[in-house]
Length: 153
Image (cartoon, rainbow, N blue to C red; front, side, top):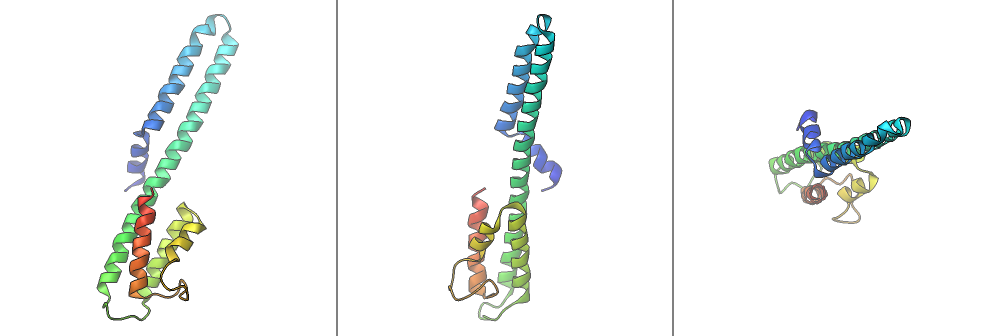
């Protein structure tokens, strides 16, 4: 998904639309009083416009980040599945491609979420295995965990 697509989808969100309508309604409600108290009406209109714009900006930004996160997680799920299927299922030795894929997932989770999601991604399986243990079974578990994280958004 491109950035333009993500931003366009964010503006179609109901909360963003309601924020725009509420801001415009607030300004339209204040404007009739401009004939009596034009300074107060002007200041009130500017204040309502600024608050509405700030609220809309933060909501669009939040939705944009979620859309980009979903897109990147989808790409990582596909590439992780391809890596797992390309490796002989009977081989239980470490594979550099799995290690690289895990590093990419870690980077995306840190960029868009926080460290707790990275810990969740590496959790599971044998407690004695650390994040460096790259078995096929553990990678399948990580794919499942990443899929669960993706479904939360």
